[in-house]
Amino acid sequence: MEQGLLNNLVESLCCLPGVGRKSAQRMAFHLLERNRSGGLHLAEALDKAMQGIGECHLCRTFSEKTICSRCSDPARDQSILCIVEMPSDIVALSTVDYKGLFFVLKGRLSPIDGIGPHEIGLDILEQRLAEGQVREIILATNATVEGQATAHYIAEMGKKLGIDVMKIAQGVPLGGELEYIDSNTLSHAFKSRVRY
Image (cartoon, rainbow, N blue to C red; front, side):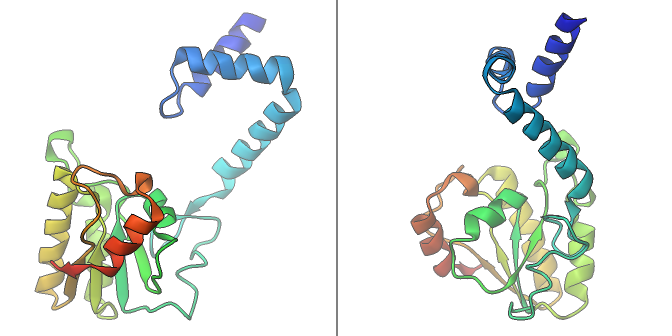
């Protein structure tokens, strides 16, 4: 029975990105041998997070409330919308002096993988843009082929609705992902955004 529980723990830890069986086994042994209280705390935190964290109905980032604190902040400029691929991109951009709102795609267009406009919420984004409150969108998708294709699709959508379309520029390397770029480079890229 114990071996089944240990195996289950190792397999469960393998769901984390970059964690293979050996790393998961080391983590499991560490928790069991040296930090059972930490393991119990981790289990409780995971359970609470999985049950209590949903997504903001406006920007689609992770939130414990229906509308996140960023979207409900009256001091933020409701007319500017920065579009990112993942919630982690918002965290990466938190060092930038940006006072507008965000929209999280939770992916990027990839027809080969069966990921089309609906799968990343572009229908929801189009409805939001059609409401007329947004006057400028800033494309902050990753500099990958799929990220650029996604940006182009959104740019066309914005232009049809008469919305200014900008993109972050300079400093973000081709093929780079926002969450791995330092804050100074991101800040420069954000301030140097150009019309798409």
